Image (cartoon, rainbow, N blue to C red; front, side, top):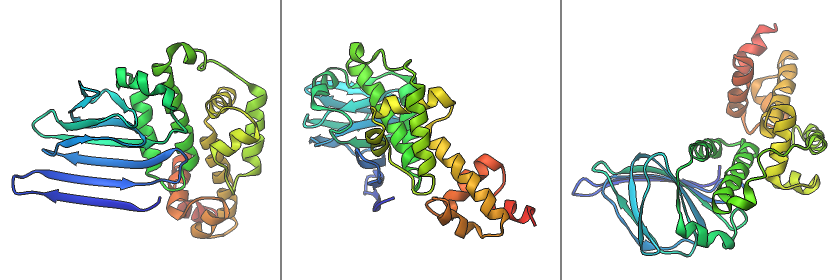
Length: 278
C-alpha cells in the first residue's frame, strides 16, 4: 500500500472528523478515501476523477448540477468528473463513507451525462461488490483481486449507464480464453501478473477475461493464483523452510499476507502447518 494519511479533528462545537486516505497500486484507482464526519459540510467543488461513493452509517445529501440527491446506506453514488457538487450530513450523527476516485481508464467521458442524470444507483449486487473492492484495496499483496473486482464494478456501472450496451455481458463463456489465462497464471505463480497485462497478452477485455475464467473453473483468477501459491508454500514449509522465507519464495507480499491466505485455505497458520510435519 502506498503512502497513507490519517487525520482526526474535533472543533469547539464537537464536530468530529476522521479521515484515512491512500493511493493503492491498482491501475485506474487515483485514491481511496474513508471518512467519518458529524457536522462538516463540503462546499461546492469539483474533481478530475470519477467519485464512487458508498455510505456505511448515516446519510449524505448533496447537490449535483443544481439538483438535490441523497445517499442512504443501500445506494451506490457515482459522481462524474468536472461537475460541481457539495455534501453535508443528512442525519443527526453525521455519516461514515468510503470513496474511490477512478480515472478515465475505467469510465469514459461519454458516461458523464448519464451519471449526472442518475448518480444514485440502488443495486445490492453493486453495493456488495464495491464493499468487497474496498476490502481488497486495503490488503497489500491482493492487487490482482482488487483489479478483478474493480473490473466487475466498472462493468456493472456501465450497465446502469448504458443498459442496452451492457446487457449481453453477463452470460458469455469462453473456455479457450479461460485456459489461456490459466496457463498464463501458471507461468507467473510467483511473479504474479496484473489484470490489464493479462488482458493485453491473451488478448481480451478484462471483464470478459474474468468472467470467462470464473465460468470455466468456478473460481476467480485471483483465487486461483493464491491457491497455487499456497500449494507451493505447503511444500516448502514441510521441507523445513521458515514462513518468512516461504512468503518471499512463493510470491506473497510478506509473511502476514501468506498467513492470511494460508489460514483461509488450509485452516491453520503456516507455522503450525510446518510444525505438524516434523
